[in-house]
Length: 343
Image 1 (tube, rainbow, N blue to C red):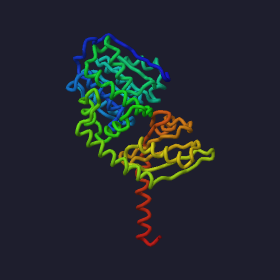
Image 2 (cartoon, rainbow, N blue to C red):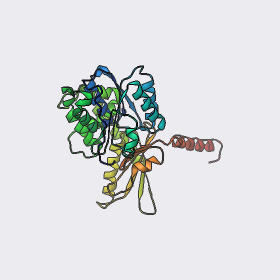
Image 3 (cartoon, rainbow, N blue to C red):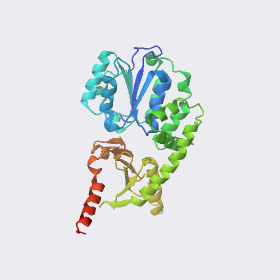
Image 4 (cartoon, one colour):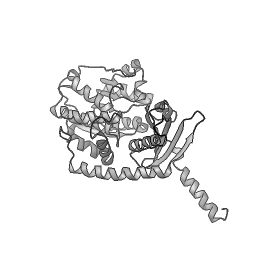
């Protein structure tokens, strides 16, 4: 399934949507996930859409909760994130029988590795699993190109194309479009529902509101502090085959901290190829993010999968609950030893 597009299309509800929609998307700090949700919001209209942002480790629970609390059939969009359990797949089948329409768009490794026949068996109204674009762009293209299923897209969605392309540019680490990094930082600073609303009301040129300008300024300061923390806490370990593991603490903005680390190790190697994995423990949410240098050929999505996480081959993450108290335990032990005269 890698790199390909797969989509069921149904003619049910072919007129412009009168139903309400719930969108469960990756967030609340992810530009791609928030942009994907905003695409749905622009298509249906703000009043008809309930956005819910979830971390991949929470997605199954969130899907179950939001559909159970809905009260009546709606359109469910799952974007930039993928379920993990058979219980959720059973739920999908039950929802479809109740009259729900379910749409799913994702570009992560976990999505690409799902078997096509198993996805078709779920009865989804539409789906795309592809690494051709980021999830926001996959979803936007689907909305634009499926009037037989969803109805004619409104002009407000078409005016969102520039932002969609910026989200795609940033999420796939292309960074060819001016302002995509800055927009990602701004969305991360605004977080979730606030960022969603700001993107809903951005004009076609992508001009920032006063709130977005303030958020970007705050993000710049927070990023500087996170990079400084990474500098102070950096620890390097090298494996027998020459792979260097660079571990740091940071406080948010993990992708930007990883960019700093890439530049730093490149400078330290005087331009030579460096095989490094960057492990960033984010104090903001106590989760672990992985990134790597271009010369490294480790599939980080598979590596993170060993810990119940996932992502992309070159960018992934996971939770490690047992690590959350290690530093505190170490410090408390040392303090007790000092108090009891044990050194």
